[in-house]
Amino acid sequence: MNVFRMIGDSSHLMAIVWLLTFMLMTKSCRGYSGKTQMIYLTVFVFRYIDLFTNFISVYNSVMKAIFILAKATILFLMFGVFRETRQKQHDTFRAEILFLGAAILGYFVNHELSVMEILWTISIYLESVCIIPQLYMMKNTGKLHGDQLIYLTLLGSYRFMYIFNWIYRYNTEGWYDLIAAVSGVVQTSVYILAMIILLTNKHWFQQLKTISISCKNDSKELSDDECWLVENDILERTDKDCEAPNSRLATAIQKLRIDLVPGPNMGIEKTQK
Image (spheres, rainbow, N blue to C red):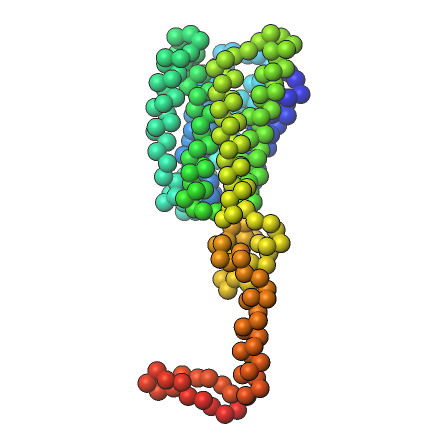
């Protein structure tokens, strides 16, 4: 056990706890892909199927059990308790493509042609692409909520730390696993590319001051989370642009002391105060 693996496991666990906490507090799973969570559960079941047959350490066994139970709980909430809040119309990525690709690679590219080894290899390949349905869903909704950004950051940190873990183990133990290392680099690259796209896209990320102004000026009420993303035309408005025409009109009406009310035949009639 080294510090890089501990930080990586902690980040992974924090991501799961963060998602569970969000769902329980808001009683909603909006913005999160059920397909990504199903892939994660498959990953953990395939990888930790030796939980009761291969004891390494108490830490290892406890973490395996926590990950499987936590993901099972998340799926129970998403497809059971909070199923009405799941955005199925946006969660449309063909996840079976990822399963099929990982299964084919796992069968033909592995360390040993055995059931346990093939399942472990499939889990490695699946994990490297499991976030894709989540990213695809966010693209469909066109919204990046603050809780989603934190969730993605924690997951990306977990995989990033594991790369340092492998480097450390290679330098100290001479250990390396080419399949795990390549898949880890691919997964980390997916997270980095996604974060770059999210944080540089003008529709997906703006400075807090600009967002705050836009939310105040928008005639439609937006929640705090929805203020992360607003239409570009709203973002480009300023207080001056929004208030000046209304202020001049209000001043003129006040000076004339008149009311405009609907008149007959869809016309406008003026009533003197």
